[in-house]
Length: 154
Image (cartoon, rainbow, N blue to C red; front, side, top):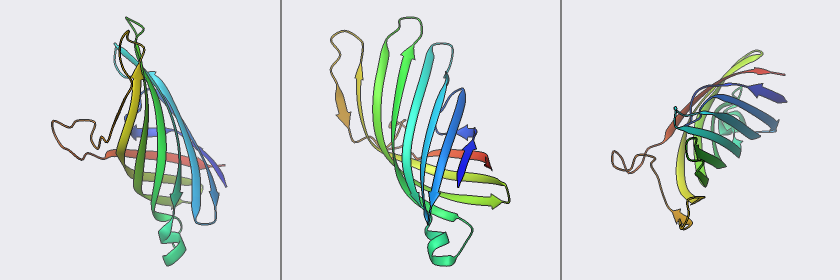
C-alpha cells in the first residue's frame, strides 16, 4: 500500500512537507521531505528515511495501531542573510500510534534523537559528533519531538 500525506504539525519541520510510505506485512518503510523558512533568518531542508514495526497489528490483530521504529534524518540549515550552511545527520527512534479511518489516517508519534553529526560552511568550523538527546538541553536532557500527520491512502 502506498500513501502520500502532508505534515500537519511538528517534528521540527518548516514549510511544505511530503511523506511517502510503503507497507509490507507488519512493517513500513517511510520517507519524508520538508522545505521551508523556519523564520525570517533561516531556511531548512530536511530529508528523513525510516522503518516502523506495527507490533499492535502483529500481536493483537489491530488495524495498524501502536508501532516502534528507527530513522535517519538529514537537515540543511541555511542562514539566508550570510549563506552559511549547517549540514546535520541524526539517528532517532520513534514510538507512535496509527489510527485508520477507511481511506484517511492519522499518525501520532514521538521521535527521540539519539546522536547528531554535523558540519558547517563557516570558515574554520570543525565537524562534530555528539550523543544529543534534546534540541533544548538547557531545559531537559531528554526531549522527544512530537509529530501529527494526517493522510490519505492512495
